[in-house]
Image (cartoon, rainbow, N blue to C red; front, side, top):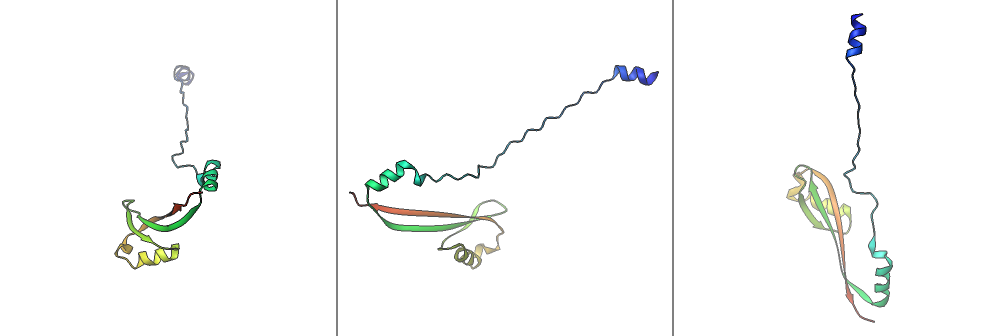
Length: 108
């Protein structure tokens, strides 16, 4: 009788809500260089490539800062230059490659 009386007086209500929020950027890169607007500009203006740079930025795993930057044609070359540098003692989390092309507009 005591159990039945307590069960009538005490009710437990519980619920759980799970919300997933994705903080990572989308993995769908957007290449705007091939958009229709850019194609019309490149068709109307003749250009000549005057400079191309490819740089590799080595980011340390501890402070997430760029610890070494080098200009190289390929990743293997950049990694070899990093290994020969004073910064090679730092543990690397990731490497960022940037490419820049500079064109000279030559008119119509």
